[in-house]
Amino acid sequence: MIPEGFREFIAQSLGEDAAGRLIEGLGQEPPVSVRANPAKISEAELREHFGDLAGDAVEWSEDAFYLRERPSFTLDPLFHAGAYYVQEASSMYVGHLLRGLIAGGPAGCRILDLCAAPGGKSTDTASLLGANDLLVSNEVIGSRASILAENMAKWGLPGTVVTNSDPVAFASLKDFFDIVLVDAPCSGEGMFRKDERAAAEWSPETVNLCAARQRRILADVWPALREGGHIIYSTCTFNRFEDEENAAWIATELGAELIGQRHFLPGRDRGEGFYCALLRKAGDKPHSHAPSLSAKRLPSPADDLLEEGFRPLVKGTLIKAIPDALSGAIQLLESKLRVIRSGVAVAQLKGRDLIPEADLALSTAYRRDSFPEVELDRATALKFLAREPFVLEGMPKGFFLLTYKNLPLGFVKNLGNRCNNLLPASRRIRMDISK
Ligand code: SAM
Image (cartoon, rainbow, N blue to C red; front, side, top):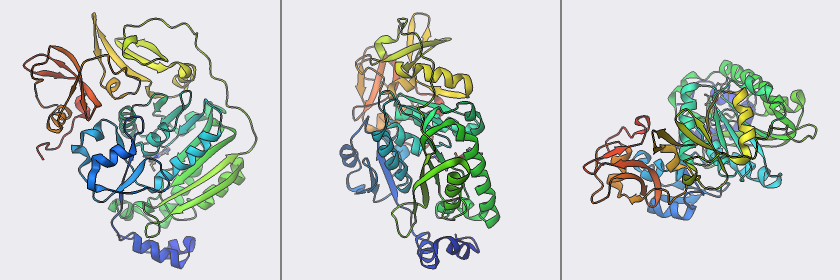
């Protein structure tokens, strides 16, 4: 559904021809695309997994391709293993820009994704991080922040932190970040064909309100970006008020150089509507210092479960692990922001027993030979993911890592005649798995 007056309104920003093509494009089916998690599966392996459904590569991504049809992702165990993310193609352009910035910059890059839920761009960004790089993924709305935290846990890469803070809270982290991504809440013009509510709620007044809110968000976070650092500003709209005029406002009012900007238009580009600008903050300064923690590491009963380079922390009965190189920066973030996930939840200490955490199975920090493994067929993998009962025939009692196509899904404690499922109830598949 195209809102009344939209065609005339958008023609003022894009011109008559482009507006006409856009309206036509908004009447077509949106393409479906998936992006592989290179830490878990290669693009070629993921193509093989999707078989005949796999189509053309997404031009501006190294790991993504279109699907000829939309399958049920919920009923695919590899989706739950964090092997891929279902992300619309245009928005992968942010990953393309970041790849260039991170590759050209020094090690120890700190990136903030300020409006990050549900996590499309954050998972893409996490895949680009080097060993000493840090990504902070923030979402101000609590319920959306929980979904973001779950998606980041599934993606399984260390070096990521999830926060649930208002943008203004970042102002106290002066000069902390080298790159800030603001994928701003917007009037949602690019969502008209996916989301009827976006069309119903659109009006020129909404556009004005959104443009003003975007400026507030940008001004709030601006001090946290170091001088000479980069900002990527994006929306899923087409109008110049939220897009070009706001990019120009960042340049003139906040002080930055506009390096480039691009629209993705349905009808012209194979993806959803999207706008993206890259700017460089005036000046040049290294990012601010973060305290370094003592090099002394206390041994922990969970050390054997982890790859090298992690610092175990005991919080009550929970043992978690954070990458050594980031421990000082993470401590600083915890003192300033509402951190809801940092490092990897490794295990719960119950008396002398260590109960492995669900997130450990999905993390690349997990040392694969720590628990015995059982490879599941699809039907049993779905039973595990739906928390339905099943038995591990002929297996001894104790903890097992369950895998599907050799990728970890989670842990169970085998009791012989049944299994204790360690997947959190909040993550269980809620649909009919018999299909
Ligand atoms: N970057 C996400 C991704 O790739 O999956 C999509 C982000 S969506 C375009 C914008 C996000 O901004 C939403 O998650 C929304 O909850 C959040 N948001 C809403 N109001 C906000 C505000 N005042 N400040 C910061 N973020 C806000």
